[in-house]
Image 1 (cartoon, rainbow, N blue to C red):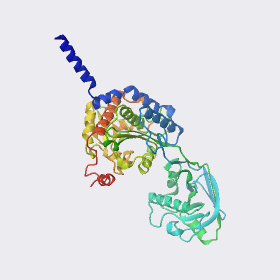
Image 2 (image 1 turned 180 degrees about the vertical axis):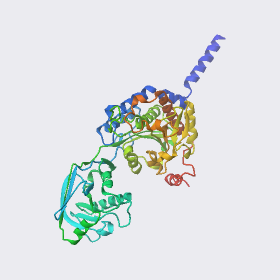
Image 3 (image 1 turned 135 degrees about the horizontal axis):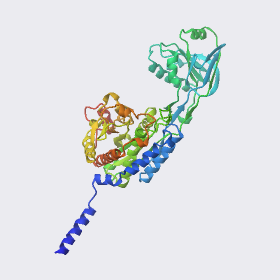
Image 4 (image 1 turned 120 degrees about the horizontal axis):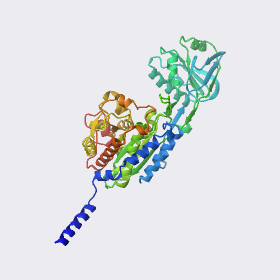
Length: 495
């Protein structure tokens, strides 16, 4: 009798030991509060100086993230540069001085001159006046090596944003036609001084031409009463001289970090779940009351970055039916630059990415919830995400602060606009109140200020939800009433 009981117990033990682990058991096997803390404390350390786009520190962060992905068994994506996708960002700092001279007239930066584009250099050339310097104005005109002068705008628009868009078009037209520079006479209602504030700080933008691009000076010349323009039009003025000093205009070495793990299902492995977050922050800024000037970016977005790393660690050990694509973006704080570049220059075809599971944060004011921006805009996944949260004692809610427009303020929207279902997983908030903004883009957003017991639940629910989505029989899609439904149908070739 004892032998029978022992044998039966042995069979039960063997059966239990050999039974496949559930997705929750697989989640519990890899998510660790200590690992979470270790990653966050490194990425949000003072050593990283706020991980500003274009800084040496963000490159260190990129290398660290790539090393973790590699250690977790994630492989380089075919077509990438190892674990990276270079992002051609141009960093432009304002000129310290600039002058424009022609026919005995002298203009200076800040008084009656603004520098929109250029670099430290001296440019001298023949003058050519081209009305508004729009495409039709170049017909039959030879401008190569010359400095183009033109009226600002198009004669109709007076809105500053539209004028700036037109100026960017004019710059490109001047560049394409071989001009040495372009000067626009500024006579708009908005004060010259007010407009000038836009050009007194460092800016970063995408430059698709990269190192191949030529840079020419582009100036706005204050001419409220049109007297300078009349002077030029009524005299035979031959040449002008532009001198710019102290302006740095160079490409950064920024890059997106990416890796993949192939799925296990013969058919579903052709579908990718993309796990994304931005790893940049805002760098060093104005000191707070404690004298701290390093904006460490723990919540925004070291936590989001480590959320994705936690998914990579788990999926590396326990692959899903669908393939996993892990992408960490640069330049989110500068206008979603890294994700915009990736969406417009995809390494994995966009119609193979069936779900973008983004993670981004500002802060939290409720440790019993996760806030999923866009939760109810999709099929399949809302219940899976809710179930994953319930498993760890949390409740998943949709965005309660619609007035903030959060869906359109993070990297998810770069892919939603292409038709890819793309919510953002965020720390729990029931309103975008003082407890959230207390740390949002503040120097006090340090690693020791967050609740790691809560983060363990938050990370675990993200990883479990990832597994449930990656293993589901049905592929997520937009609900029919969503504004991205039709573009999604086009992307995936749905009838």
